[in-house]
Length: 178
Image 1: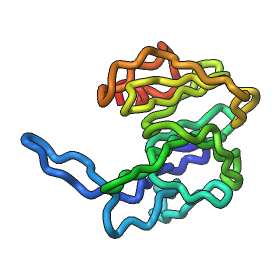
Image 2: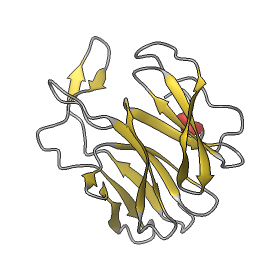
Image 3: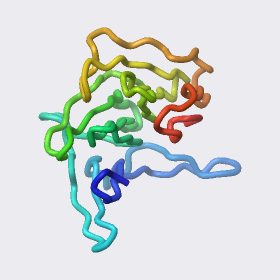
């Protein structure tokens, strides 16, 4: 729930599904995929509106997780999409308070799958699922990543393993064990 009392949704555009022995797993980009977006739902009226579906000229591919900062800005991760013979690189973004402008935090991650803020909001954490890494990016200001400010916040657990937990008191528990 955002600071305006509305529900914010990461719409990843959908998946195709692959049955496995005991479960169903998300698979490649579906044939009816039209793109990803951040949407806002007014819970009193049911009205759904798209807040963002691109950053500059680059369309969002698979928004995944989000967290608001104390200023009302919205950080979100974007997994990208996988297809039969290729896949997108992931990224994370910031939508400024007022939900008008989208800024790229960092592009080029492998399946950015989870995002959170440090308690002082001077660091944004992003989980990279295929590598099992949790990245820490220092912030220069709200919505602004310091140049060359990334370091692994926790060691890799190995390809395909869940990302390690974020440090205690991080503002988004959803990033833990993605």
